Length: 384
Image 1: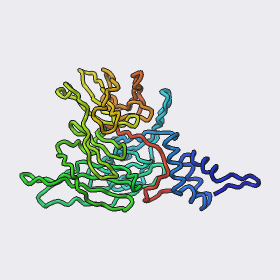
Image 2: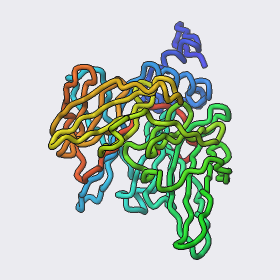
Image 3: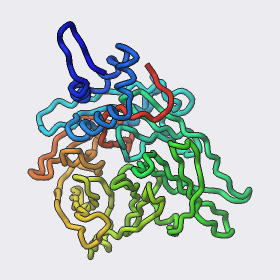
Image 4: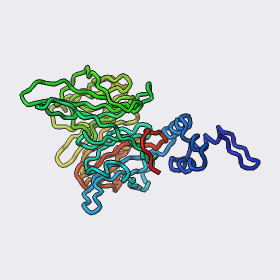
């Protein structure tokens, strides 16, 4: 596609370079110019070019999930975009997203909505906490979503089940987006059933069962959808267990265990652990309560999968008024919730804490993931 305006001729490579710098909202308008423009912007080559530039230089944001108690509007859940700038003096713009077109907000109590802790090429995964309801792959920038086909959980009549974990990720070898679901089937005073592991493939739009190989007992898992007990990194989805991290490799479709650092005497005291991504590495956040104050030790796994590479990098506090961690921004700021349920950020270098004036009404109601907008399709329904 080349652009011609009277005597002006702009080569295609230059047009592509210019367009790749634009936000998705502008590109969607250009797609309406002509069929050739639409085909060009939707082409795999341009989508990949735009994705690469967005990752490298694009404006990052937080995708924020808030749970509210609004009986008038019945908008129990609000998803917002908050810019992630490198300056501390920026104005926080809490921009609610229009979610009325998503199935969750048409047929179900949106209070059940959760988001897995992964944004992969601009795509996120939404689900409800009943787990047998809708699961959705969603590109907010494209206003495009894919409802995954239903996969009923079959178990003996006398048995019951618990979903132990959901994991969303990307398989670069197959160029495929996948969801893994682990189900524990049990019965009172009955036999111990093997874990049921199922994988959904977006490329085939189907589910299949796989052999778990690694046996992980349910009591060692956290509650699926826990706010800061799971993450996506290095092509694998990770869950925090008692003294280790469980990872599911999306390409190999195998589980691996990675030990936590040796915390010494801390194992003997009451601590709260969470994991998050910090500068493309796994970070372990240890919360210690000292009277009315709290402190946070932050360990970083400098070499992926190597226990000996765990290094204690930061200590925050003791501080008062801060409750629990949410994760880290792209520029390294530490995101937390204060005692009033408001979002705050902490500069890891100077330890300065700033209130971002974003609040959820319900305790433990905030979720935050790093987000970058892209043109990547989820091959589902599109809204104008």
